[in-house]
Length: 626
Image (cartoon, rainbow, N blue to C red):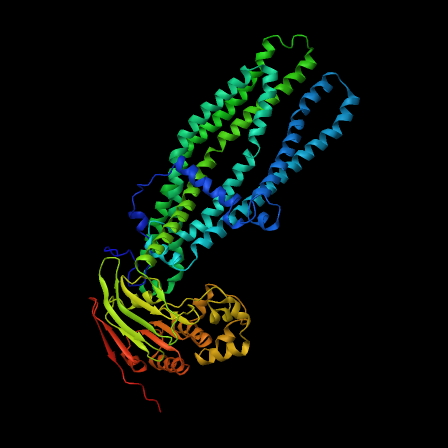
């Protein structure tokens, strides 16, 4: 058994600290290095050879393999690029052909060559358009595959909860999934469009340049490329770091505005607009400082890249000059020589252009490295969380027994806070069917911690928790103080967490449930029971109405147990008492966390916590109703 308490969430409801980023020094360095290559290779494997393909090979032509891998899309991409480059090559030879025709004043040849020339140009244009189109499909599919994989790993029982509340080093998982993956996919698409068949083109044009100028021509060009690559890499490294932290600050800035929208009324009541504006401005200033640092660091990189491109065009003429001044074409007349120079200049200039294109991807590579680090960090954090959960389940077993009496039992259970404070020590509590329990105590005494242990979100640091086999959300329903209204229809709200059940609940059943929770007017607030709403729910309903709507889930599912964590705090005493009676009469066993002593009468056991780890259990006489 471990002696050190686990880093678990606090007893109070967590709120995301918007200033955490400002307080965190940027000690971690991100660069275009081996770690980037390792992480980038991992993401490529997820795109081309995901584990979900088993038992199919990633090159399998079967539909499932094609849907879950980029391999065949990449093959088509390569084929189109090759075809387009063939057309580009022949388009590049058009000027030399025209030089010969015009020098010889060959009108017949001119008219005959015009139509094929136009067809070649149109074909090259169409080919380039198709390559760009395939690039769009490539980015779209890459985003889908990566997002689905990360979401499937992230939105899982205990994983998302533990990562969001415990691993504060991972900022804004939502941004990493929704924005960074999209930008990674688009940046990868731009790089792939330029470099997809670059090795083949380099071999082809190197050979043709060798034929024209001997080994000296390619030697000059390759030496020039190596020099440009070394210089570009020197300027890439600091940009990767800046991109990473700029994306992190983007997430904080966006989340700050989400909170302003969410708490607009609270801010208005407090007249806190001036202070919030100052916070928003400070966050924007921090973001712009990071963005300006990227602009500053990209200046020398762009200067190096553009200089490389322009000097490269001059270098091509040096390459062409080698055979010209060596006398290789002394036997040619001016017309033929012009055609030869035009053809050979295209070959050498295109080879230089290929190397220039590689170097110009350096700015995109710096962005790609930043996005790769953020996505890979999230995946690595998820793996750490999974390992942590596995270790917790080994060290602090959370057991579910198939008990015929449907009872929950805390057997010498102790729970600690992340700071090592004992929330409760050696809790012994038996909750049989109909033995309703209310947990009370001062603020911060750990009342909600007991429900977290009951839900399996927190481990019992000692003792055992015995539970019957139950399905969360159906056989046992947890309702927190802040109601969770999903993005969906009114019917979906009632049947949550099972969307499939929304199709089986009739309109009359929805009306009946709304009547029972005193919300019949909701039918007239929505267009229909199946009309989906998102943030509008918080505007359409008061806090108390939101709690009552969520309470309807208990009436729909009719669970064995219902755990209520101040779930009716926004209601008046009469409504709260009415709802207690309603679910107790249905046969639901209630486990309540509450400050309202008037509600003690609806329970059979009172657990009073002192905030120091101690507790007292007091039996309560059954409520006698007339």
